[in-house]
Length: 438
Ligand code: ADP
Ligand code: ASP
Ligand code: MG
Image 1: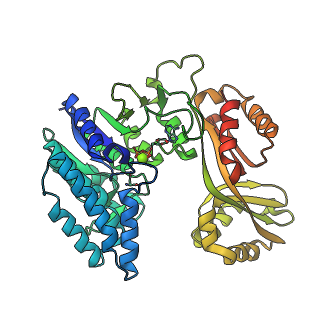
Image 2: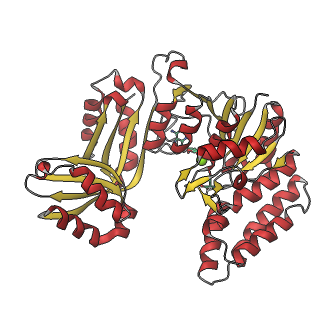
């Protein structure tokens, strides 16, 4: 029996009116039998996501402080939703169970996952679907690795092909039952894993924009819509920072050749963006382009030593020093007498001066210093590959706007490039690169 997996993000389940839209979407197509939900998100820019309130509750409880006042906000929000949706007091025992678990020292991951857990219980009742706990479906082999085979097996065992289920996103469990979260925005991954396990006909990702756009609409005014892209292009864009879809959510469905459809809960008739294998894409129309995206929060580490380029396996050696300090290398550019490493500022702050000293000692460097902070901004799309002049145009546009470029990584065969600019020039750089790649 063909199934569509439909994942709804935080804004799609933020209030009762949104949840009614979800119900309309689900009932419009009987193939939509597996629903994956995020925790309720913000209702306005001043609001707080349930996930963030739970993070705060856990931090308070862990510090031995009163968390119940903060938890009351969560209780009120779900109780209000339950009343408006007419599902009575069904959620009260689940809310009690969650409050008790925080009081008795549940782990951070267990606490933070409860936003999705409560939301899925609520939406299951409202739709008349069965609640199915992600802890029974999604299996981790360590903190960051999903055991895809075990996940496929448990999904197939527990999901009746004729059944209708609501599954909480954002978490799974280890073999011993311990709850494990994905990184933020991870409900996209949950949906992808379930879609893959059941061999879904389509993985729908319902959000608050009508598909993938060619830039972040909060930065570029009215960015062009994208009708279709390949899995590879979506992954590149998500990696660059287009956070409408989690970059780790592409692989599970791409491997199983399941189309992804990014859609808008507030505009359900819009076809959104289809993401397909490259050979299934229709011809790109003139002027159609993929996108520009970026991320803030990076810094450089410059290591200077005469003839550093002669050191064998230099990048590998630097990487292992960084990893020992808990820092992941994102990029590395080598010259004759110096190397620039780009990594997340937060991780470099935590590692601090001891990391710089270790690098200095390991390579006998004359200086090792922090640079930045930077934002990484880039573009991705097959059309870049057929236009080798595009990087020159981008550089000219950035120079015209007096935006300094500290690092460039260009892989034309990969049809993408990334530049590092000053972090406070992030938005300007996105707009400049968008204009230059149009
Ligand atoms: P959800 O809660 O539904 O998972 P997200 O907030 O994770 O939603 O993602 C949707 C948001 O992503 C949009 O509201 C938009 O502001 C932002 N966004 C950033 N880059 C893009 C892009 N290239 N295309 C579409 N949306 C983007
Ligand atoms: N609720 C989680 C978050 O805010 C997961 C998700 O929305 O996908 O990051
Ligand atoms: Mg999201």
